[in-house]
Length: 388
Length: 115
Image (cartoon, rainbow over all chains, first blue to last red; front, side, top):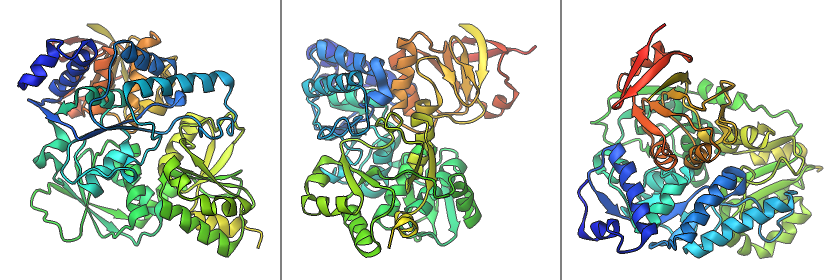
């Protein structure tokens, strides 16, 4: 790999041992993928900071970096943790869990990471179009490449942190204009509406395109819907980006496939709504301010659902909603910040069956929390369970 | 490097599909410890890199990972966990491999002893 003088100096140890080792790892990953140089990054976002998902080995990884005196050199945000800092025991973690999670947080602070605890860093600071990023969190990666036209690979959580330390990542994949182009055309032969349908579309697309960036035709998703689509393609597959456009040029397309309504139904059929759910969990990815207002309007009109609705979001969105938080609570709707159903301790809280509108959460919850999942649109859940 | 193959026919998400403390590949019900793990590729979470790192820390890492599609997450995990990684250029060859076959990884080439 060809290195700039600054990068050579890092390898000589001029910025310390931590930076030298971090750069060596970034180069090793880049060389394995065939990159011939590095690229400066605008920001980093690190995934894998919940004690639920990384456990003691992850904590040890952070502690070692702190010991070596590592510091991030670009703005670096981070993913949700295992609980809401304002109410750590809401989902019944044991004391050891809380202690370990706090140790991870303390390491992140010393590394210079901004304690944002959200999988939607783009709501806090939107990266400029065309900027190079080293982001973890598959849904945020897909959103950045697809919607924001900011450029990032699916960086493994630890590698995003090492890239943040040296301010560089390898020039490969999503950083290379030609590799961002769609290679397969997907025509959707169904009228789709709602986040669950778009989440299911993401699952179908991720499975049929075999890694090729798809050009998706025949859909006009709204903001929440494209966010659901992005979350699914990263969870059910390994895609960092999709292109959504009816009029886009198709000169590089090597293959064409169709998605039918029955394909979408098949995915949704894996998680049928039976009404047994003990709660509805939404906010995977973290809910926007607009989504919370939409939920507020629904419960104002339809009444409170019988079983509670938990809305996972960032501390910033929650803080900005002080005016309606209490009103929501009276309607059996609760805002939960800093964490989400997937990376929290839902199992310890005693949940066995939960409803959600997130296909991404539907994939991970059975595996990570051992709970059964039923998928339903929030509006339909409230309609079918509200007292009025 | 030689060992026994463990073949996973589908893309798996290291986060959720692999138990980091035992090395069990949950969809197969078999452990990848000391095996040459063969799969078409991975999918899912960027946290998967930590799962591979945890396998090493817990002494249940595979000897190598052999995959058709290289995902950056998988590469990062293997680099940090010091697990050998090889790309299977011939996608069709995957269907001929079975768990339990003995094989060697020699300079990035997979040499299989068919029984």
